Image 1 (cartoon, rainbow, N blue to C red):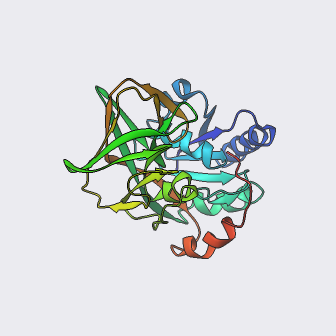
Image 2 (cartoon, helix red, strand yellow):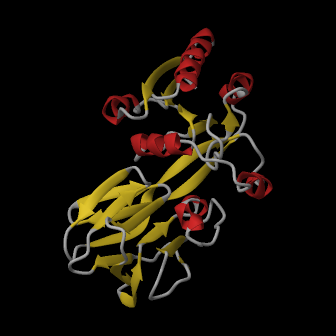
Length: 273
């Protein structure tokens, strides 16, 4: 590896300090590097071309921002966890300096994660976790759902989630949805606090196209990975399908890591991004 980017959570002193330590370490190894806050996408994106690896310092929320910066390039990301849950992160902050030499020499493997693409009129937005329609007010909304052009039902709920396999352990899970294997390319269509319609989640094939239309008079916001929000106008619809892009992660644990860590990570540990 000749050039490595370091993206960090700007509000966490430990993340900023570790970013500095990693740059010093990389320099001592003759590796070129750059660093930037994940909240400054405009500054970070021009640095991506020619970068061999991204070190993301923070938690899962920081990785979601890092993926948005990297997309559509195929630069792999190593998630360094300073949060509490860390479903997507790979190693803890206190072990990265001891693990990094081996990774620079080619240890580890690359895991591809499917992403989603949401189309709203002429906008195209990509998500690693989920695409969510939710009520702005504290009230139920009516959302018509179609899959591959076939009407499914009109949900009367707090909102709707279309989740990737990665997002199946996030908001979708909290809403009662199933857990998918992280390398699965299927999607989950999951209502939020459903009052009328199908209360259970649907697992859809990677080829499916989901159309969600907001009923007239409803006030709804479109959320991408819980970080980008767009208000939708009366009767507006969105289309969600599998993205042509993937998120790539550098892993050091065995490919079966997901099963061994799932229960441990779900034992009520507080999430930080």
